[in-house]
Image (cartoon, helix red, strand yellow):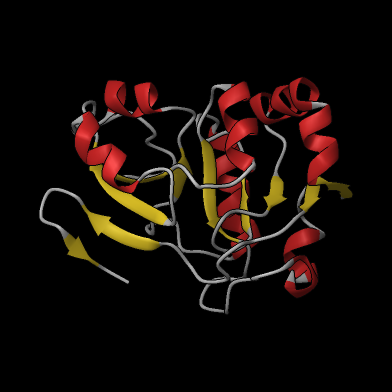
Amino acid sequence: MRVVDMKEVLDKIEEYAELLREGTIFVYPTDTVYGVGGNAYLKEVCERVYSIKERAREKPLSVIAPSYEWILEHFEIDKSTLRLYLPGPYTLLLRKKDANFLKYTSFTDVVGVRIPDHEITLLVHKADVPLITTSANISNEPPAKSFEELDERITSRADIVIKGKCYLGRASTVIDPYTQKVYR
């Protein structure tokens, strides 16, 4: 495990984007809480994240989208609804256009999708792959709201830990944009 500052990631963004594309597991700050994840297209990355979190595989993982265009290409949602919530502290439960898309993150026809209002989105955009985003904690334990709160059981099993600031210090609000139902 290597610890780096967010500034280094931004200064060497192409290098870190390549690491994300290749399957590196990151622990990283967002606008809400710390997350853990990697390239959501890679089965081995998804399996590793489930293992790190000690999370049941039946529980889907959410993703940080690389762009609005990527979301519109893969999910059933219109641009105006998307712009109501993203970027921001929300996770939208979106229906996949193709049931097999992101099948390692969600075995259902729905995926939680975010674009945080945070610098981490610059890395995801540059890599042009979805980043698994699930809170950096063992399942059913409180999420880390700061670098200092990160659990060594999580960080020791990641490849890179990015030191930075979480702005809100609470989990994202989960919304079903089709029904406007709010889950937390």
